[in-house]
Amino acid sequence: MFKGISERDILILIIFSGVFSASIIFANVAAGIKLTNFLGLIVPAGTIAYSITFPITDIVDEVYGKKRAVYIVWAGLAAEIISLLLIGLEGVLPAIEESMEEMYARVFYPQLRIVLASIVAYIISQHHDVWAFWKWREVTKGRYLWLRNNASTIVSQFIDSTTFTTIAFLGLFDYTVIINMIISMWLFKVVIALLDTPFVYAGVYIITREKV
Image (cartoon, rainbow, N blue to C red; front, side):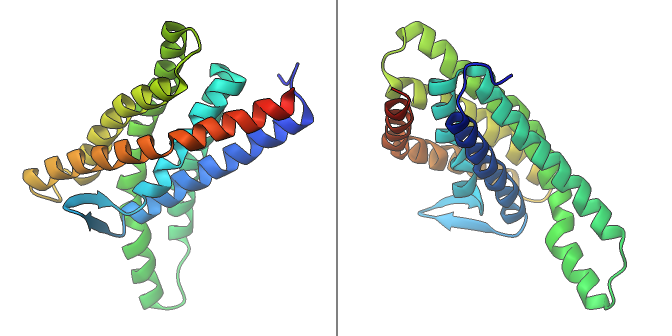
């Protein structure tokens, strides 16, 4: 599995995988707790945390290839599923005070729907992002990293925002709020994707320079 890859590369991939998974888990928890109005854009808390995953998959895709980028995506998916199971298992244990039970339910039970929505959106959008990045790499013959980084993310995050918001919040908010949230989340992520382009270049440069 790790043929042709150094100990340093394994460490980098493990760190990326950990940061990626932590960002996914936090984004799910935060999204179920509050919504934020940022300059007229209604977005769930945790959107910034989720956006950290964009440069990670792009850097791994660029330096280590499509297969290892998919492994990172699978690690994040496993983290989401495990968090969902843990929420359910911990919820079975009785609290010593009723107020604790109510607090746990208020914070974590909404996460069941949030995590389910996130898993569906995640499977579709993240795999599309990895595929699109690699397809753009073929089209551009390995050039224009900025184009591949942004083109893949812009489309994949529209898919993610639409899928996630519809499953997570349909029936809880008015349709106008749902549509506003979809557009807001997507625009917010597009802005972050544009801003993270220098970090993608820097990450690729640092990793590949050390490999020489």
